[in-house]
Length: 100
Image (cartoon, rainbow, N blue to C red; front, side):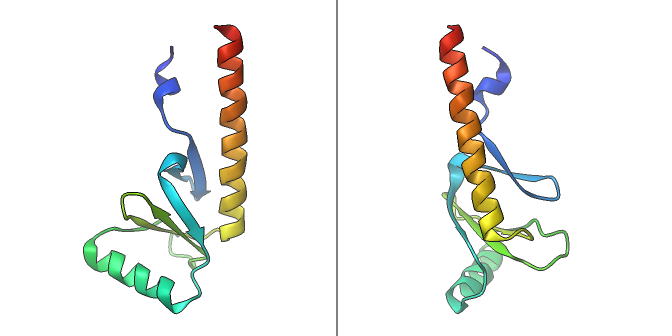
């Protein structure tokens, strides 16, 4: 078994930044007041990760560790990549079972 077999699937959230798919709880658009409060509270707690590279925030990713990640990609785009990553990993698991 290769070392990479133990790594969780990673999703590209833009500009070469990756997040572990298994840790993501929600991917949401940042427009509403409650989400702006969520972002501000995460900043105060030191749980905010800004992956926008100075660009406008278009998606907020919430993880199971209460981290809030800002992305410059649209939430729909991140969601699609999340789905594609799951399909890729499912097919990789099937291939692994077929070999063994």
